[in-house]
Length: 275
Image 1 (cartoon, one colour):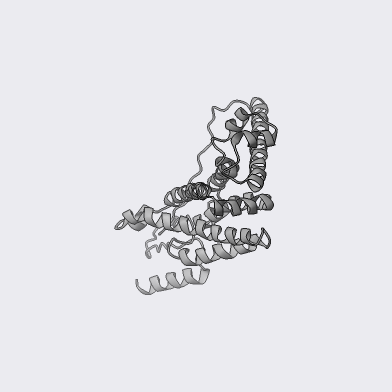
Image 2 (cartoon, one colour; image 1 turned 90 degrees about the horizontal axis):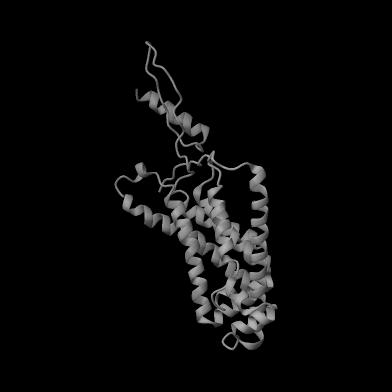
């Protein structure tokens, strides 16, 4: 598995001046913040009622009343009470995708995906008490467990598309059909490592250095898959420009950008001996 460097798209020149964009951008940010605040308040109200009355016995009307809003306000944010258990996944998915889109060119694609999935851990760690209660509830209610599995699948699809988009087709001329499989397996490994650490942290009541545990899990994934998928997006340096002289030939060396200097020198020496 080998990856190539992604090229960022230039900004379009047809944008309106920044002075007119700024107020609209600020208004949009405020609206998004208010939307997320209301979703979280509804989720907190739902969790409180589920804990006291039970999931099945709690109605949408009761959740709305507990949050101090009308029933129609609830349905502007969630389609059902099941959705109220996971209020932040839509926004977190957007943030994870933003991490992928803004990745530096030198970063290994697997490392980028690991940084992307960390947005999910940040979401859970921001409100440990709610996260722990939600974890316990999803263990008891099959429909919520199914909703959680569906959310996980969305992240896996996002990361699979990203990894597949960085394959070097020249490196798999004979087995290009394996690319989707390799990308999906690698993406699944990252998400599985994250979820393993997350569940362990939730079972511990949200205690412990989850960041360090996550980095350790990702190191295992990288050790397992890193060699097979290459050391970076750009796996080859551009050959230096040279002109052949009348006295001899020009030797062009191609090497990975992260290759140790002594390895490059050995390659050059060997090539010269074979001339």
